Length: 398
Image (cartoon, rainbow, N blue to C red; front, top):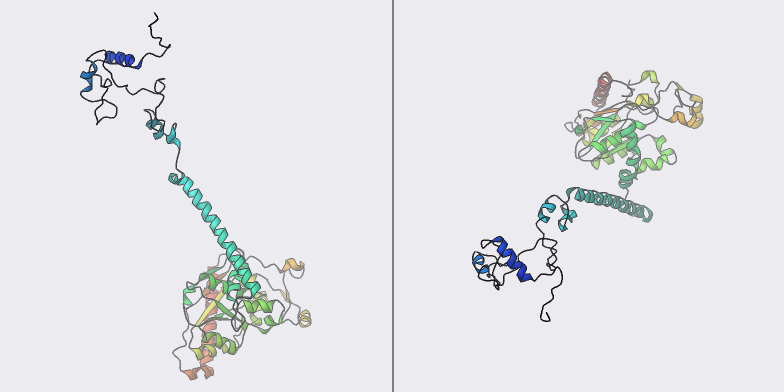
């Protein structure tokens, strides 16, 4: 008994357990392999291993692969997937295969890209805003000889007018292709609405809808440049005096010039005479177009007549204030400042076919009969288009 070897409980020698398994599985079992594995097989299994395993009880055989949970396999590589791991990884559950790469997840990628894009857009806007403020403070911006500030107009003034244009009056623009993509042109339009909002809406319509992104330079009355604050804003927005000299200089530079020949006669006419064009003056705009050979583009605006229905005119107050008229509407001055809110009518601005002037000789600008005929032609085309748009209109507000 003194020479007996003590074997702890539950720890049977490995060689004996391997021999038992070999005898239990039979000589054809691929798991019983010789102690010297073939160089081409890492697990010691091969076609010659079955015969070597049955050569005797003292033969050594390699330990077969043990299933998970066997106590004598303490050095199992945890990174090698077991028999159940491929199945679990295929179903997205269990084992290390559950760790997913966020870059391979389309939803996660889209979310990250969207967040990055949104953040980048806001960063870009903030950077542009700070750069704009820095240029305004330091004076590092340009204006032309008329005081027109293109940067301020595009980034600030247009942004302030655009909600009124797009959401309040819901302006519909037609015939924008009739305005040339380059070179000068003279846009002639009707004028109405008690306050000159139609000129501003026409300016936004050209700026936002023309394929070449052209700017409309409006000719305004003297009163505009006599009012404080309004004077400075009008100059910054590109407006200038309604005189032949300024119009010619703009046309020479290839600008789109807008003129409203009715003037205050059209702007302050009673509501009962809406959409009836007043006299177009003496045809000075035609003479300017003939001198420079630029096309005349008639423009018709429907919807402005109803924003302030003018039912009366206080001439006494107009003389005291130095205004050409003092409007009385159903809401003004009875409701005070609230009465100055325009009605949300639906607008349509249509640019008609241009009338060419480059085929006339230079002396044609001094021909009064030709100027009268062309002025009447432009006026009749605008009036005819107004009637046509009124027939097509479903409602004043829709």
